[in-house]
Amino acid sequence: MRGAAFVARQADAGAFSLDASIADEQRHRYRSKTIANALRELDRFLNLLADATARSLGDPLPEGQRNTANKLRDFDAFAIQWDDYERLVALGRSRACLFYRGGQVSSGDRRGEPTFTAGWSARTGPPDQLSRMAIGDRLAVGEIELRDIAQFYERLALRLQTLAAVAVNAD
Image (cartoon, rainbow, N blue to C red; front, side):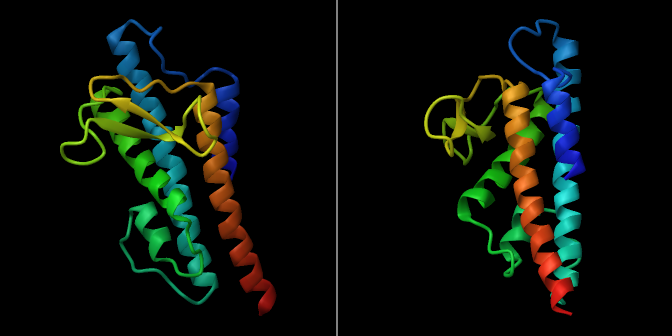
């Protein structure tokens, strides 16, 4: 949760923003990698928290599962919502796009699909609708998106902490 709070504070300070106003390609690629690394750290923290929670419940998860979306999907006590699973998958794709492609969308969600789903809420439309863009577009990650991502990870972390607290208090 501290990691999510850190990302939210950085977003509020304008430290992590990636938008069309960054004309310098080298600066854009650097910012893309910085944001991707922050997202990777949030995901890794959630992954480790899932392991600790499962152990506290006496239901350890298989060793070596580094994909957080799949780990939480397989964690029966957590009972992940399908929308949350899909969002974690989209965040993984977004993180890879930022890190390896500088945010340039080069493929759709699935083979032959013309659109890419980012791991953050769309600025328009229903609040649970994720942002979608066409191949060739560039991911724009600003304060609003980073705050949204931080709140998402914080919500999942709180659910894991609540599960662990119930297990500890039951003993």
